[in-house]
Image (cartoon, rainbow, N blue to C red):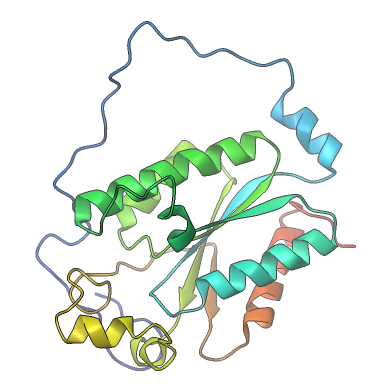
Length: 227
């Protein structure tokens, strides 16, 4: 399994990594029909003055995902870009409060956020997500929901030892002491993207520099303007 960053430390490879015990949810509701609105996504984008899409930040706890997301949202706001952050911890306070951290719950967590992010793109917004999202299969499922070019997978690449040094919550210490089961990077696997659209090496640059790197990518892709 690939290492993250230059520390040489490899993340744990558990049995059947990236697999969950639960299949993709089946459609339970019957007699339902999609009801189309009168305003299209393209019309919303024209009103907003920019294209929509999803910036999907993935990486270990402590790698800098949430901090970068906040810096990026601020930079987008200053350009008049309508955006919103979907943050892993925040979402678990509400929408996903009934989910834990088992493989099956992690899969469902990302499935729900993928659907929400898709709605944001249809609303003409730039959704910035900050989730560990450890399994490639789950991230690929989200990509499959989107139109080509809408899903921008960003690997927040930071060595495990640096993430542990930054751990103000003490989560890694608790995980190593066995107090937090199924903790990504310690007792649960992380599968980094094989071909992300963008890689941020956060042990070598500031959150603001990382946000600027993402912004430059969005400008190059003509999702937001260069002004």
